[in-house]
Image (tube, rainbow, N blue to C red; front, side):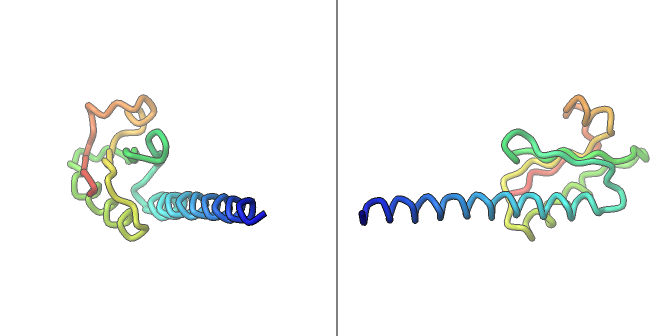
Length: 106
């Protein structure tokens, strides 16, 4: 009986930790989507290691904006993500060869 109780407790801990992880990513995404320049954003496979963010192309490099987004991620305890800032059409196709900005958030 003690073994079953222990297994149930461990299973409960695993479920609650995955909820915290999901909340962390969801909360970071909400904050990023609230940025006035952001048109859309999407996590790469499995909520990392890439974050794709689309913005209107005004002809400027967006490396600094990508670095700023990294600060938002770090505030939510997220790191080891490559941030791709791109035009909406390129984001739709996940074409990172045409990034307007990029930053490796470690």
